[in-house]
Image (cartoon, rainbow, N blue to C red; front, side, top):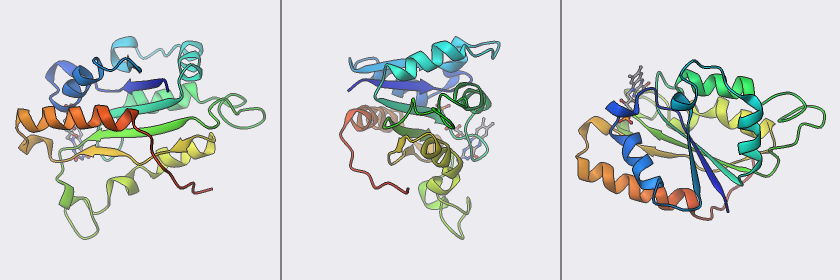
Amino acid sequence: MKVLVIVAHPNLSISRGNRQRVIELEKIQAVTIHQLYQEYPHWTINVEKEQQLLLKHDRIVLQFPFYWYSCPPLLKKWFDDVLTYGWAYGKDGDKLKGKEFIVAITSGGAKDAYRAGAYDWFTIDEYLKPIQATITRCQGTFLPSYTLYGIDDLTNAEIRKDAQEYGKYIIATHRHVSII
Ligand SMILES: Cc1cc2nc3c(=O)[nH]c(=O)nc-3n(C[C@H](O)[C@H](O)[C@H](O)COP(=O)(O)O)c2cc1C
């Protein structure tokens, strides 16, 4: 299985979680790392190139820090530009059919804050519903997301451990239940 990891971090040089995850991914042969902010500093996305990359991989991981309960803006632009009518959805738009998707997040908020009545009100999976619907609209399979919570309180050793477990998670076989 070929895995494409699309990393959307605006400044990896000041990152702890996502940078460590990338370091771990570099050790895995089946993984292609694609850093959106490095690839497109001026935000002009090469749609043809992105679509070809997607076609060459079986599983696509969307890796990003959680920003305002969502993804960083270049990844949103990537969805808007790359997932075109007639290619990803709509008439004859079936190029992502059967591909697996995993959303991999790091968050400032703690795990017990992401629930009803707590500091962040909703679960991460609830916040991810627009992405889940987008993937499902494109006939992709939305696998369980993978979150590292409360990053500011973690030691470097804990962040390294997360990155190692993350590396295993994204190449593992996952059972899933379709919502359609
Ligand atoms: C602009 C901005 C918005 C953020 N919004 C959230 C948020 O909505 N929820 C949250 O838990 N953390 C939020 N954070 C914290 C980041 O998720 C956290 O710093 C990041 O996951 C750390 O990952 P890194 O070490 O790879 O940079 C935000 C941080 C920034 C800079």
